[in-house]
Amino acid sequence: MRILVVLPNWLGDAIMATPAIELLALHYPDARFTFIGSFVSIEALKHHPLCERAIVDETKKEPSRLLATYKLARELGEFSLAITFRNQLHSSLLLRFTNTVICLAKRSWHSRLLLSHTPKIQENQHLVKQYCDLAMINTDAFAGPVPKLKLFIEARKFDKPTLGLNAGATYGSAKRWYPERFAQVASEFSKEYTIIIFGGPNEVEMAQEIEDNLISLGIKNYTNLAGKTDIHELCANIAGCSLFLTNDSGPMHVAAAYQVQTVAIFGPTKYKETSQWMNEKSVIVRKEMECSPCMKRECPLRHHDCMKNITSAEVVQALKDLQA
Image (cartoon, rainbow, N blue to C red; front, side):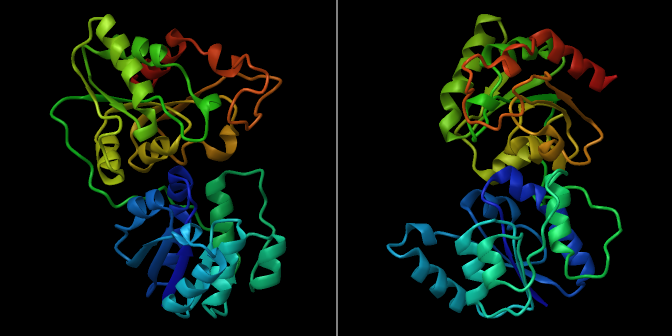
């Protein structure tokens, strides 16, 4: 059974779609997946054992995205089932252009116009549940357990206990705690753990700030991998960590997929919808604010108190409590 899956664009969202993909695999034992998505989502999920084909969606780079979407769909051909986890016009068009009869998408004006199954998904619940509700809408009433996050990249094995630091958050500065505080926390664990600093190509400067602060604190047992890993290496390295300290970000969900002990710092985002899914070894540190969750890329009030009021001492204690 050929199933087309259009993945979310963001790394974290794509990982949060993996329980829905596993439910599809369970419900259709002969399933074979074709994944379409952004570069990062494809790099993370293309290793699924039931993935026949993984395609990076580059239609938006073409002079006519509509024509490029049509050509891609005609090349793909018809599927037994198609689902998009994006709420976006061109993803609805892609499904429609494949001539697939059963097409699933969250309800929107374009999905209702173009596709066969467009349920109104309850939004005030975890994003994992939203994705699973969508994936199972064409089946009998689904009442089974929702699976954990799942990635099929082998974890790296470190010689010593390792603390991973992820100070970045692609969405915007409002989600980012401060590099000097990451370093202060790491210094408290430097005698027990080797430290790895993570970050994407656009987060090298932030990672360098952490490194500079570690040096000023006399810490030497660290490695700065910011901007030096591809998605496969990023996942493998995070998976091998013993402890992980992170903002609300894609790497946070990578850690959850491997059940890494994690302290996640939340500020302006909806923690009930995007926190680590089914990681029993995770703790959230956040401050309840009248203005949160604002869901803004930058603090609209320019005080950033949702992050500023989280102290290094609080985070150190959260990590220690996690180890207890």
